[in-house]
Image (cartoon, rainbow, N blue to C red; front, side, top):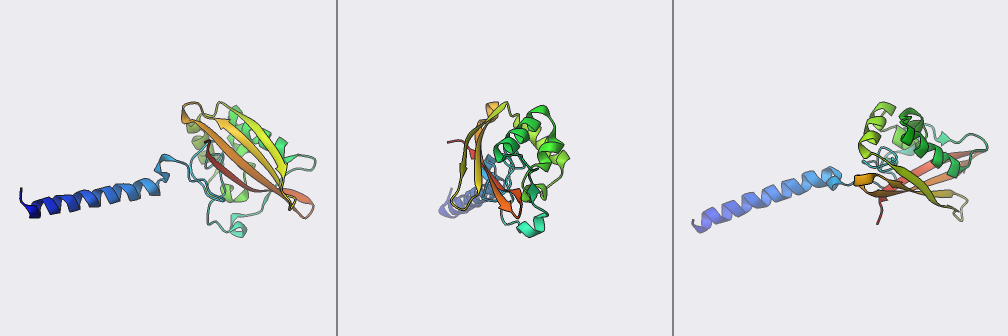
Length: 172
């Protein structure tokens, strides 16, 4: 094999490697696309826990998801994951942040949740930020799909408490 053929083969291999890398990154590299708003594929939502889509204009996502009066954020999160475990995907889908719901319907959400195979969940921490938001942290056991952690943020909007966001990542 001469030098010209070797250079051409190396160039072809380089192009293939770059192409595979782009395709893998574009699909989340097998990991959910969890961002401070993003959506991907993981436990309790459209993304692990169903995160608000990155880059989605909150105003375009629709009305905020409001908690019923006297429902605490921790109880909301427990009800959400309990619904998923029971296969009540329509209820769980409706409990997500508005941005997550804007990414698909309850049927697609349910199909995604079935592939995750959540076995159990537990609330690991509830706290209040200096600006008054409530943060509920939760861990989901997805069996062979690993352990995932989700951070839910709730805020006051007028007299209501709304689901502000949800971010999910694979547990460290």
